[in-house]
Image (cartoon, rainbow, N blue to C red):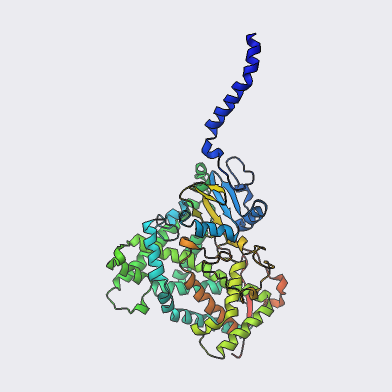
Length: 503
């Protein structure tokens, strides 16, 4: 009789047990969450095994299956992958404040002075003050225009080098030339001198290359903390310490040199970035005191974010123009018609070059320098498009995928600058269809500086020379392989032959 009664009660006991176990293992706050679509993940690794050598392409492929809001896990960390303009607008405009933080990076922390720079600093009062210095003091319209002579002199030097090789029809390594040019422009803007010649130049270039490589590298310890020891054995930790020490010593020397010269009078137009920052430190502008660490962090930011990204745009622009001789000819006709034989191309000339601007926009659409932008992090729980996003979720915006979205762009894989001639879409952070520099509070403050250089360099190149591929190569054989890392430039240097024109 007792046994018979127990059989009837058993289902109720089992149901109660399942209920309490569910409540204990899966709290109600988790059960009720509606998470974005997500592929299956592996224990420990999460979805790391699904990310190949080119993460922007891997994530694009996954997003085509799982949608523009996609949740992945790298190790134990949640990552929200954004792959459409509408989704980017939610993150960078509608909920911009919630997603204005940066995720911690152990390598970035050591290289960027404990994230005392503006790019990696946590959202808060310190970051607001540092960004204000960048926007109002270092990278304002007035300051960028004050470096016009620097740009013109460096471009004249570049043109002279090209002309020298062109007289012998020798192939030119445009990738190397663009890298050197942008580095020299930024060095002169930051330090009032170049670091490109001799042993010191080679050392500086090597340091800068190692810095960008480390900042863009994969650090397993950030995702799987108990594997942090791997960097002790693969040499990454030692390399980080070496690069951080070398840059710190170099920047200390630069600051000391400027302090020794602080008694000499400089006009506003002659001041470099270090001069401006030391002046802010001395005068406590706007009541904010920036220390030496902050000065060095900001200068390092400008190099880490400005050299690679600027020359990459020029490299891909010339690559696409060489692949499309018809587009090259339209651009040359516009530039040469406006310049009309003048020796110097001025800002007012550039303002009239609508096709030039379209070429650069189309380059940024197909080849955003940092295709996954700089990650953001949510500061609190938020609901977006009915999805629950937890505090501490890292957000990756795939600008490369947005630039190839067929719902926005007709024939998205084709290089067609004409699409921007009667189109108001711009890259300054207001149009989420084209966000190579990000948008919102965490948008890149150096857009004006970078694009001012790109415009005048490209205009001079197509004005002064005709261009072709070396050794009779066909345009369809031009290698378009990308490198790996934070900034995506060409894996193989761009070689081209310049022929002087009568302009």
